[in-house]
Length: 444
Image (tube, rainbow, N blue to C red; front, side, top):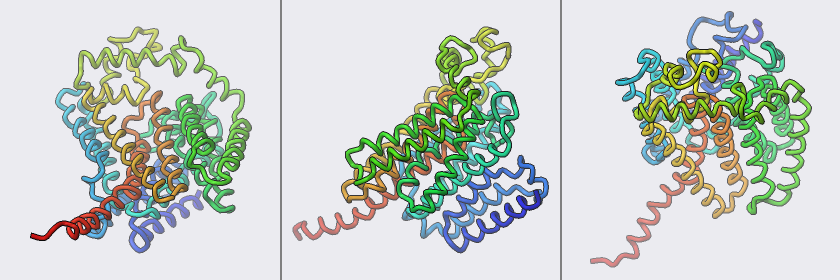
């Protein structure tokens, strides 16, 4: 245990040093790693000094931004990306909903947590000012997921048919932890394709650990998210008309290896739980949650402005029978979409959807530009990030993840990619076009 604590301290000090002397992006990378390491809930955490390491990382990010604001701001103006404006409106909706929240104390607590997360996203958007910085952030996320995979592997199932107790900050339960791992699947597929031999081997090891964790966590939502994310990206890799020479063959090999590894680690317990997805009538199956979603719509017809955090839970007994609630008075809605709808109303959910559309629109324009300049490898990098976000949204469709940290990280990564490959080149081209047009205009 002392060894783990020492390694953590060394990593923490390295992150601070790297953020100050190497690259601003390492401040966010440190924040990512601390999220997954989560020393407060680890067995080796008791041997560490009793300080809030994530708070130090957050202050470090703010400090780095303040010191380098003049250099970073022209590259990453917040107003240039529409998704950030919609994100701010989502947060504003939570503050507005305080006026009529069913459980104001809980609502205020989680609104404050969301506000801190949104600030982190805005700061990170400026710190990640180059392609190298984006790659650092992607690796920070993947390494963190691999650590969770390692913890899951050495722990094993400890609660019936699944693994519990590997917590992440504000993660909830095993379903939320599993959802946090889903985006790594499409990202690792991309990394295996573009990396050298040593990094390929590392990615395979990381992928094996993450796949084993997903099996042990036994989350149906995460299973569907993984299939959607990795499956969609594999389809792009194999069938896209923009694929490169040898890409299809390598993609087929990687997919076969991934499927083989998945089948190897998946046991009967895992397949039995996934089999419940076929039962549309069972209240205990993922599909049986449709009744909760219908109840959420019924609630928001009567409360169109939302009911605040846990508003659905507080009214569940009025809209669901005791049998549908499985004998529990307070029942979660089990979907990020309906969670957002019941918490901040129709307008808040609309802001969230506009945020996702803004991220996708800029990313699509970035992909188009990359094809125009012949950067096809980077084109698939954007696709991998889009598929990562899509996979989390699929997983979150069956889990309360509307305010999940990883969701906003994925939005951040796609937004930063859109900034680097579209907004920055567009901004650089504007002065040239203005100068050229001034030369062509007749003089008075």
